[in-house]
Image (cartoon, rainbow, N blue to C red; front, top):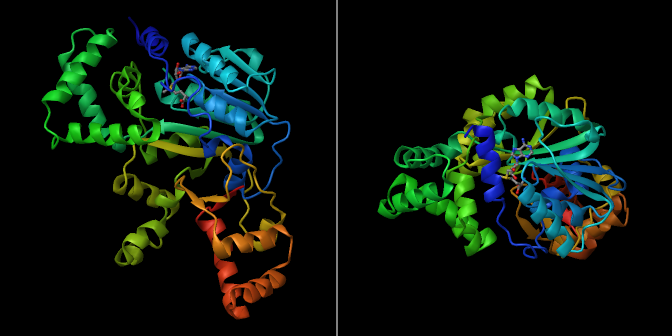
Length: 403
Ligand SMILES: C[S@@+](CC[C@H](N)C(=O)[O-])C[C@H]1O[C@@H](n2cnc3c(N)ncnc32)[C@H](O)[C@@H]1O
């Protein structure tokens, strides 16, 4: 069987992700809220009314469900080459009461997009997809052509170094299995190999680390599922990227990398925090060099990032800009949270909450300083410092508010 057919067979027999319909409806997936994404990317507010979103390679529609719930007035198109995945995706949205005329599913190949997609999208999400294409750059080029001038493209691709051990395991299974077209055999062989490996073995260690992370994020059924195993260790086709290759590809397609989803851990500040000694050595390095250090220091299996056309303008944060910024409303789970760039929600408490409320009232900087001084019994200079830090956090650390 050729790779193309095998990939289709894989995602037809093992539709991904294996999250049962009706489950995880209330989880917040930050990257699915356009208002939020646009804000962390551009530091500018843009209304989410009448936007168009494309979920390219939507799989079983977990991301489509999140996009639909977080962007209640958006028109959403979701495409995939696996009909069984699309069927589950539609069922998932119906079950969550999110399926309506504004949501369309198509069985389509993002390498060969037909003319029904002759429109531009404000937000394109393609998570875990282009690295499976025969020609990932053709897919990327198609997505870029569908991106509005001020649109944001959110990609997740496999990372070269973070998958080093995973690749060893894939290789080991391939050396032992007899029929590469037989996923069931691959699962049996793979699981048996895991059984004979001691926990100290690099492959077993890496497997368990990833298993435990799925366990805590999605539960035991997900972590144990054959679908997850096939996607990770028996995938019919995949490629991966290191930072240099990623930059080269984006550059070839005239795309600008705006930021990683977990930008904070890929920053100088994060390295400084861990080691003041290294500050002097890395303080003059540019962003790309820092990303290259981080990909080795903190290897992850994937790179999740946002990019745009080169011309997209990006603001810096300031008190006045923040004042004008209308807060994104996260549907469902909503309880005064801020989110760090690492994707963790932080409860918005105390002084920061108060400062934010002051800004929301559209008070000017001086008034907010005075109010903070009265409220927290500190002198004006101290309150100024605190508020300035707060603005800096909004900028550097990407704290963002989830109401
Ligand atoms: C790992 S899954 C990711 C699913 C989903 N994006 C997510 O993050 O949960 C990869 C998906 O890409 C789809 N896919 C692979 N090649 C494709 C292509 N050429 N065009 C459209 N979808 C494709 C597969 O069928 C599969 O559903």
